[in-house]
Length: 200
Image (tube, rainbow, N blue to C red; front, side, top):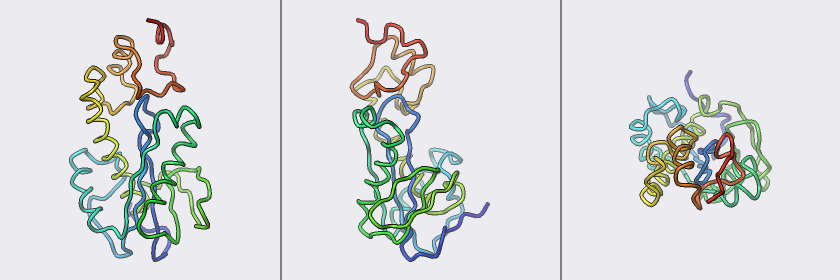
């Protein structure tokens, strides 16, 4: 499917998040305003691209975008307000960091909250439909992966440099063996049984 703009707004921001289903680390969102005439042959939903492709596209997006921004919401905040609200907060933060206020917001997914007076549209699988959401998905994913790779150096046993905090078998085995870290989301079911998780 050829990606497109949602509407012909002069400054239309696409926004998307990464890390919603992870057991640890922040939920990260990006917002991107692309020129109306922007096109790129490999720009697609970040989940459909290889890590190499995403990392190659990131500087292209940053250079060509009218404006772009990335924002994190911490595990502590996620535990306090829940992951849905944290995902929306991350998107709000990224949009508010844009150097150009958007005329319209295209949101990946089906949930959002009004931000200032900016009109918006939610689109399920929007990252596979609209250029600016696809660009935002790439920035959110690459910046979060980079964050987790740096974090993994302080917590080498959890495999975050590979699993980015998602609930892989390796990650859950490490939680059983080493326990939780300050970066884990305590409101999530970190282990299927929850047995012995906080006992030591």
